[in-house]
Length: 140
Image (cartoon, rainbow, N blue to C red):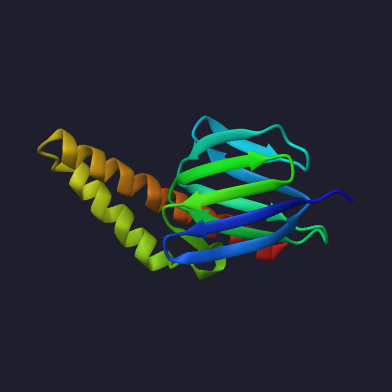
């Protein structure tokens, strides 16, 4: 089976490194699927979940808050602003962040505050979606 090497790193350190059969990432223009020998590509990531399908069939789920994605035929590099294994996400903290962002949006006073609140809301919603997806996978 052909594989592609994957490195996922953030400012905090390396989150994942290893071989994968397939990688799925939340690119700005939509989710992208990356197979071995994919054409070279550089794009930005939006908040969401990177799924790494291992050769064994198991999947690793990693939340990223945004960043950059570089694809080479035999290497995928994710440079994330923040990266957390989905199993380590804190649902209560994500719900609080969502509530704070919604309150900030309703009381916005300027463009900068609006943009910050929208960004925080997008990150919180992406975390909650990753938590929900992982919960559904565990139930199967």
